[in-house]
Amino acid sequence: MLLKIKKITKIYKNKTGSIKALDNFTYSFESGYIYGIVGLNGAGKTTLIKTICGLLIPDNGNVYFNDDPLYPKGQKNLHLIGAILEGSRNIFWNFTPLQNVRYFALLRGLNLKDALSKALTIFNEFDLSDKLNTPVRNLSQGMKQKIAIAISLLHEPEILLLDEPTLGLDPIAGNRMQSYILKFARESKKIIIITSHQLSVLENICDEIIFLKKGTFVSSHSMADLKSNTQKTIYKIRALNSNYKNIEPIKQKFINVVTNRDFIEFDFIPNDFPLERALEMIKETGLSIIDIEKFKPTLEDLFFEEIGT
Image (cartoon, rainbow, N blue to C red; front, top):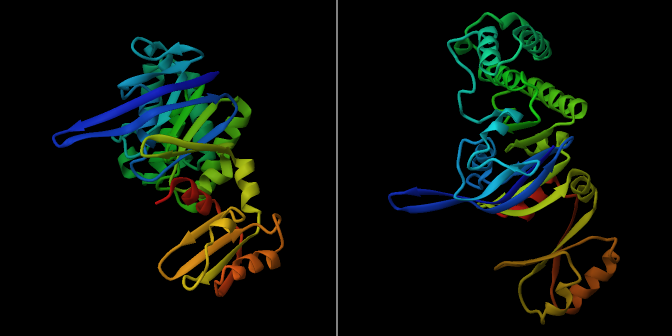
């Protein structure tokens, strides 16, 4: 299965103007991989998920399932998708978990016996076996989330869209959810697309990370490359911002140079040249070095480097 998003643009209009939630977004997703989509609030993550599963019609562009377009008349392909949407009632709260299974299985034309067997297996993995006949409204948010995911998997979708899948889960339940998503991806070779504000979740389970900013594609990186970057040692050299010569000639020697009112900070990787040489170059400009910090960047550091604030 190949899911292709081509030049998707989505604009929300209101009384005061319009907001471009997605701006010419293009990407391809392949079976057997878990993709994480990250960005600040309003970056377009949920809009993208809703566009893929047919809940929002884009103003421009299209979604393709193996080259078969979704819009305007490709809704027959929506059976390929299972989805969990953040903040939405993905299941009926007045039903019990088993009643939800029966309803959605019949709605999709599934064999009821097979659907119940599959659901019971998932419920057991999620420690929900003693809640099968309890109305969903009486269960915790985390339990509702688990039930919704189980329901989304009944028809064995080729594409699983998870918008904040660990929302409301305690750490133990969250880890179990991550393990199940990994297991599902590896065993079934499906496309899984996840949005989350919890970067640690994406770090644990994703193969590739896509950065979004104000509806626009910023960059994508394999998780292996991102983790490799977090293993690099970086030195941050801080100098007083006063009485110095031109620093432009040495800027290109450093991976980042930040100037503010009081300080100038130089970041560099010691693999490029020794720390002693870095200090010499800075001193030669007349700057007074006041601090040297050694650190390894986290995934959060890389996130802010890509997205900004």
